[in-house]
Amino acid sequence: MIAVTATVATGVNTDVVMEAAMNKDERDLLDVLKFELDFLKKGGYGRSTREPWRPRYIFEDSLTCMNYDCKESPEPCSHCILMQLVPVELCSEKIPCRQIPLNELGENLDSLYRYDEQHEIEETVENWLRKTIARLEEARRVARLEAHEHGANVVGAAIKGAPLFQILHPKCANPACANAFH
Image (cartoon, rainbow, N blue to C red; front, side, top):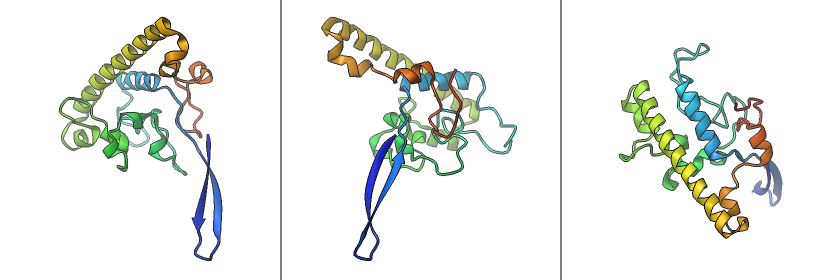
């Protein structure tokens, strides 16, 4: 949690200082993507029994989303771990995770929702998840080798990942949610 202090002009020659607690998504990206792949493969985006009329959205309708099932005061998407994957010029979109490029053609969830069927979208996302997970695992493997060769302090930050308590007890990004990844 990060404490932020902001000064707000009230229009009456005084300033009001407000402090707000902002939650940052501190999960490990690799673990989140592995969870998402597992969720997808197990049919997690099938029709909901609670809302069978509503389409299911990749990332948004799983524990990957820090605002999953959050009706009151959702966190800004800018705090989400997936923002690392969103092109900088698209970070200000209403739902930035829909802007993550999923293939060489630059297709993203936003464009796929307009033109593809659910099974085609899931297949594209599954392929992207597999490639991205493999790329992250390889980067970590290389970082570990370099750390071993040059001393752990040289690239320690590159292989840090998540804090130990989250490795032992990975959690949903929504602070109000008690669900844990298994």
